[in-house]
Image: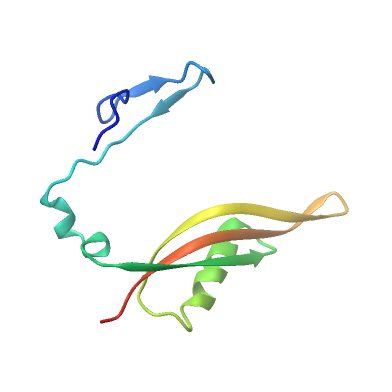
Length: 107
């Protein structure tokens, strides 16, 4: 299903409320998804994780996924839902990243 007020794939629209330009990409159903087994006809379970790091956001995500992969199998994707951090003496002290991780359910 495609919303009526969206521009065609690859086109841009200007948001009248915010006054900024945004790009919109719409995926149309066809058989191309069968070539990519990661997002095929599987059922996924999601869990929420929060990783932390003194280095940065990327490192916090990698820490969360590395730890989760020790007890969860078939991890396939992640989605960052929140980024926050701690401040110490006026400097960024650490990062915390909350993400949803999806994994394939075993048969």
